[in-house]
Image (cartoon, helix red, strand yellow):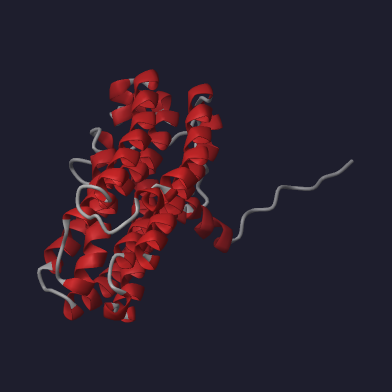
Length: 303
């Protein structure tokens, strides 16, 4: 008779679970899009590296803080349908998680200070708001995620701030075309958040966490999820027609053509899946955001 035990995960494996690497394209894709909009000869590569670093470190901060505060507030429980949460599962202590949060806040601040020094001190205010939003997503006196504002926060900080900020630190300017593209990408990234919240409707409702999905209900949330992709596609086309005539129409539709099969597949699975079956769509939607960002960035770079 076998007496083998399930091995306890290593510290590296626990850390990997905690940072949720499958969600990290959500922080990389907006910085890529904003950077690709800058004329190549104007790029300061130190700022490029620090922009990516700041975005990734803030994303990890959000993920760790979400793990920490949801366990502390009783939102995570044994009935959780999503990926393992290390604090709730006691794979890491609250103190260890708090130390991780502090570490990545400090790393994001370090990268942010470089961006401020080399670009514009007005970015200091933006940086402070980003850190407060990262910590206030799940924590603080008015958690953003618990009041139906998670998707809006994603649009603001991962769409507008990340894309426009990555462009601004290089050029000290903004433009309407990039804002429209940032909104399109921000809506796709908001869909990543919405998948997570649709999956967690039963457990969030019982824990008193009023996400947008809890407010709308399962069916209406799936309608909104599909609608986010449609509106994003419309905004993409608008960005290359209303603000510039420099791009051939057939070329500007390439990102939409590339993304459509994946978006269609994701939406189809969304409508027939419930609970834990939605977990793969979280990564798939994040990957779709990266595909859109990469294809649109290449369009901006090569033409």
